Image 1 (cartoon, one colour):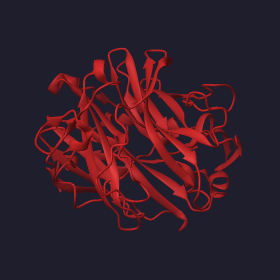
Image 2 (cartoon, helix red, strand yellow):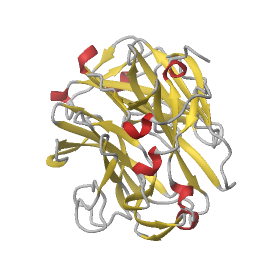
Image 3 (cartoon, rainbow, N blue to C red):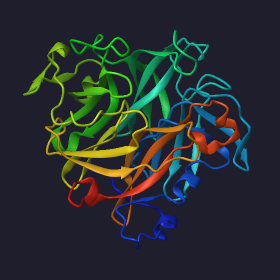
Image 4 (cartoon, rainbow, N blue to C red):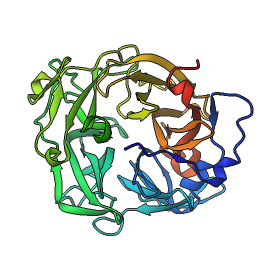
Amino acid sequence: MKHMIVAAAAFAVLSFSSGAQAVPDTCFSSFLFPDSGSVVEGDGMYSVFLGDGRSIFLMGDSYIGTVSEGKRISGDHMYRNTYIVYDHERQRPVPLAGACGPETSAAVPEGVTDESSRWFWPGHGFTVGDRLYVFQQLMYSGSGPQGWNFHYDRTYILQYALPDISLDPVRQAPVPYDRLCTGEPSSENPHVHFGAAALNDIDSSGYLYIYAQVDIVNGFDPVTDVYIARTVEEKLFSEWEYFDGEGWSVRSEDAAAMQGLSEVAVSSQFNVFRLDGKYVLLTQDKSWNSGKIYTFISDTPCGPWSGKTLVYRIPDLADSDWYTYNAMAHPQFENDGRILVSYNVNSNDFSDQKSDVESYRPRFIWVDKKLILGLSR
């Protein structure tokens, strides 16, 4: 079902009279990341519309504390993931964490008591009726330079009941495939990570779609592929079908990369959504700090994709140590024909996260729907 919400009243006063097709947001970030009482810094930034006037934002490493004059003065504990439930009408965020006690994350792997060694980082998700499904990547610490010594284990699916967002402890299970590989995987990322994007397309095609990104070549000039699986809710935890380039197979080894995306290195976090009868894939070019956000269009969830459009080029940041990554569309937020899009900001200097919260707060922009669809370039 298509859920499109015109942004709340405060956004209606935004002026887009300049005619620009993509403009920086001036107020949404202050609603979602206040200086106290909620998540004040973080990345990740997936969102799922809950169908009742609320959205849930799925955050990665996050801080809950107090900010004064741009500095975080309390809340030094880093949560490995948090959820922010945002009420569209009241414009009020409610943070969710502490799933297993004080200073634990919103989602904690079963049996884990020390999240410094094993933890969840969120993927995307969707709702089906009164149930919310969230993909979570199980990560673990290992070798590598400080700040980059994390490794992927596998992906789990978590099921929550709505409207209270309570976890069903029985429905926390790995995705139903065993280490799907690409044939010639890279040494750094040898496995396909499903859950990088997700789409409830039941009303149009009868299926739920789960997307995966894989780095064929990693580094400053990466090469990537994107895969897609589908299932129905009753088989979400047990049986998927994989697109093989022509049709669908229950054999994961038959999976083939979607076509039409080779001109841009698709980010490890991206999203696919429906807009005006088309399927849109939005991604930030994964090339290091490229700052380029693209869209592709298709008539089906599995491609082939075409109409590559550069919808926004991120301007230079205030500090040379800062970088951007993983742009994401939030199509449930619309204002004056524009869709809300976010991108993450981080710093190579970890101390910046405390001394200047802008170094670790997502940025938001409003992008014209016609530009997203490649109708106005």
